[in-house]
Length: 479
Image (cartoon, rainbow, N blue to C red; front, top):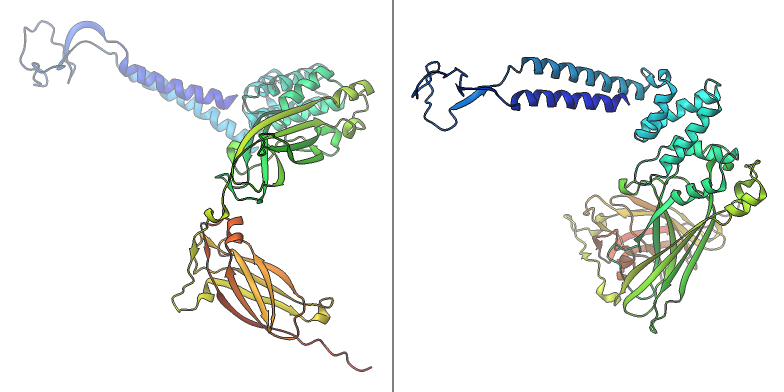
């Protein structure tokens, strides 16, 4: 509360100072605008007797005068100092240097829990909970705090403190909320569904491509989970079904996925605008036809009461049956454009290097080579591969490593890795014998296409990466 009051006082001080210079003038005597000398009694003077300013120019004379701004300046200074002191007090309170919250009366804390932003409302709520648990405040204060948390939770347009989610869920666990109240919390907890993505941002795909449809929803719940599932509120099950229109104009079920046992809580995200976004993904393989495909996603979120009932000892079986009926069902349309694979092209960077050695563009090394005896009957190799710093960060690897020994040839798929970083991978070289093996990198349009969201371009090939040797199996020493 002191932070808001401090901002208000500082703003008021600035307004007082501004008002001192724009308030109406007093009196109707003419004055020189430059030096404020009174021109009363002078008949059409050409110049100001005091400062010599020409009075024939427009706006050179004014009527009346403004009082001195000195008093307003003192008021401004005082208000700004008081406001700054309150803002500083709030900063000390938030950092724990001077915990002012501990000394505030309960009615002020109740008001702060309802009015202020997430952090300060959580601090006020935590202090009230500590006083209730310590016996300083009684049952009436606890009931008032639960009502405050319920009222704020219903306001889906504003922030919701984590501490108040704990107040609500604890009240549920104690059996203090009626089913209608729990239903209201459930309905307010999950809202505002949205279609997030279908893997590629341009929603352009090729026939038979494997993708994942993602949908999301806003969540109003705390992100802190104490010990015991019963005290966190809602255990949820999620079911996501994807429907895609066929050639006959029908929209049959295309893919479905279900998960059970998640706990409803605020999801974390690197994106600020998705800070409270829950997500569900459904993998599917796209149709083989080319053209625009319409579809829809149906997402059902249900409350699994039996998972928390054992931790709610005071909840009767009838209420548990009612809780099992709680669910949210969302239907979201989408469109996908399926095109000829040849039209989706990731630009290829021709291999080059200042010293004429293209292999310097790839950071490749053999970690260890294994003989057939060391690798369950088949030779194998552990290697690390990535792009070197001599290659542009936007370019990546998209293709295969080709391992060749005599007439034997094995391909290892190399997907995109982060710029200038390496990925460790193991490859079984079935049929290879002890001896030298040559390694070559070759880009592949299909592999690059599957990584197009991460690649602005792909390194071309072929690039010779040298050879390594599969060791001879060790001969056991005679006993």
